[in-house]
Amino acid sequence: MADKDGFKVAKDYQIEVPFANNSKSFYVKGANNLDWGMKKHLANIFDAKSGNTVMFAFDHGYFMGSVAGLERMDLLIPILAPHIDVMMCTRGALRTCVPPIGNKAVVLRVSSGSSMLNDDLSHEIVAVNIEDAIRCNADCMAVQAFIGADGQLESIRNLSNVINEGLRYSIPTMGVVAVGKDMERTDRYFKLATRTLAEIGVNIVKTYYCENFEEVVAACPVPIVVAGGQKLPEDEALTMAYRAISAGAHGLDMGRNIFQSKQPVSMAESIRLIVHHKATDKEAYEFYQDSIHK
Ligand code: R5P
Image (cartoon, helix red, strand yellow):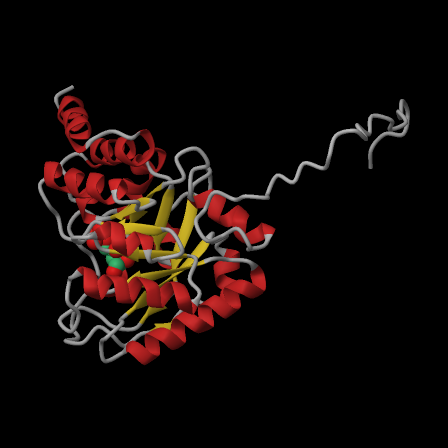
């Protein structure tokens, strides 16, 4: 309890100054009508100045096992952490390899259910319940969505359940658009999938870059973050990142194009330049080359 000695009577009420409604317009797309807790989690993910985010995806192990570049998450994560905004991972990776210090946001993968050994990856369950997401201090829960695939109904059930639980405790949900043998990689497909997820109620959509991406972004009422996809040469990955941000994406959620790069830290920093500092792909690649030759 505060010490009562020296107590000063409150008198500076500034009655001529109207109440400062600081949350009148919130900068995250589609989040204006959410409550304080939701907004705070989204503000932990999206930078207040640029409005964007650099997510580092290293949730691959949940269905791929150990992949090249992620063999030793315990060694990689502490090195990369200062250069990214958000850790997107499983609870197993979080509890074992992510130091519980610092100010990085957490997007926790909560759906699971298939592995590389299955031909059809589209059948998943919700594997992490809301209580454990809260224990992990998750800022967002990520659910894979297989729109148009055999497991579509399960995906939509999983998403709806996670969104409903998230709304009870003000934790946002991210819908992750899956691609696979049943899904085309066209703007027609991504427009359908991203809009479907937003209307089901997710707060963030993760999807892939495609032609006419401006239209995909325009039709989606929540922020889109773009997946990196398979490893590309660094200049091509940076061009994809630049095109995505120029088309209105609010960030990258990149995995292999960072952790399989010869210089993951330089690659993360180059992505940051595009995402937060309006750099072009050419400028970002020059930075990448300069930093690897230092
Ligand atoms: C998407 O389906 C999962 O979240 C992946 O594990 C992750 O997005 C892959 O990231 P990247 O394609 O950039 O390696």
